[in-house]
Image (cartoon, rainbow, N blue to C red; front, side, top):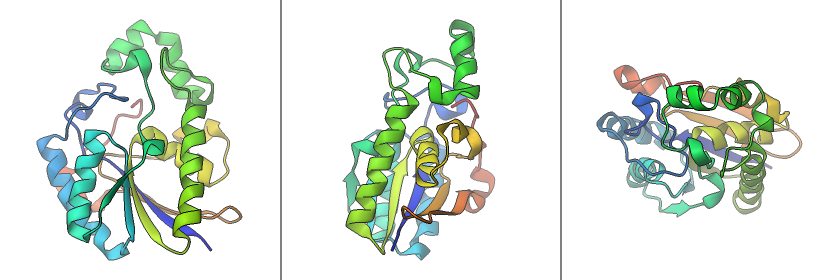
Length: 212
């Protein structure tokens, strides 16, 4: 058996359009983000999930609230799917990071599996906790569909973990704001059923910055 995990990246936050690293900092959804979350909730209804899990940060929880109201399910907070701790990058604009940490910025784009953010996490740290989340979901929700409202780094790491790929393939998956992807997770034959769906957003779709 398998658990179907619908991975949802939070809707647009106040910092996404300006390219500011958020990490564990806690901006709220933008006005457009609220509208995106409403459309997302309506779209997910057809999958009839049995549970909703969310990172504790505002941008994910506020997104999950729209889904919760639409599906009539309580939100369960889960620290394993919180965003990576960007450490000293947190709160900085992409251009500022490029200027202050040029070598590390290149490392993040081309060798993400080797990075450790100053006073923050490694990608391996994130990989380990999202793998733990998947295994808990399989144990608790075998044969069911669950929604996991998370962030771009743990979602990409979840695809790598779930598909048994090298962590160097981290950037191989798109992950836009308010997108959803579906992983049919089981240890022997996992399937990435859908990836980075945003068709329902219409004019509210804004492509994400690759470096974030």
